[in-house]
Length: 78
View 1 (cartoon, rainbow, N blue to C red):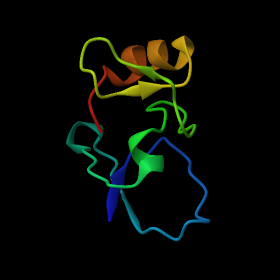
View 2: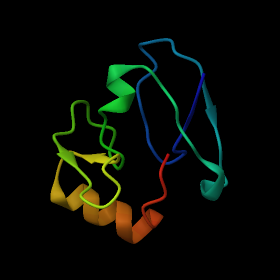
View 3: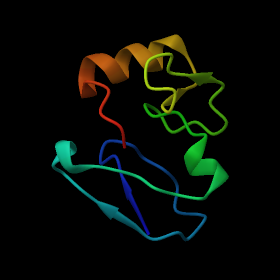
View 4: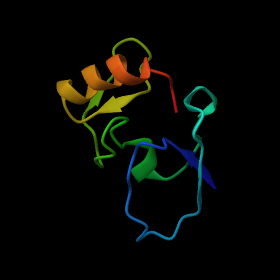
């Protein structure tokens, strides 16, 4: 089971159970799924190619997504 960003919308076609958490400060994610591990932290795009140069964990599909993550969510790891 994964805890996901409540503002991220992912299709339910994979049938993996998730828990929605509305208190953003308490969100964390641990997953072995390659899709979850490599998805963009901002928009959920699969296989995000860019890794954050600061934490080396967060992934982003574009510079715009990285900027939005820092501005809106203060780069809290999920």
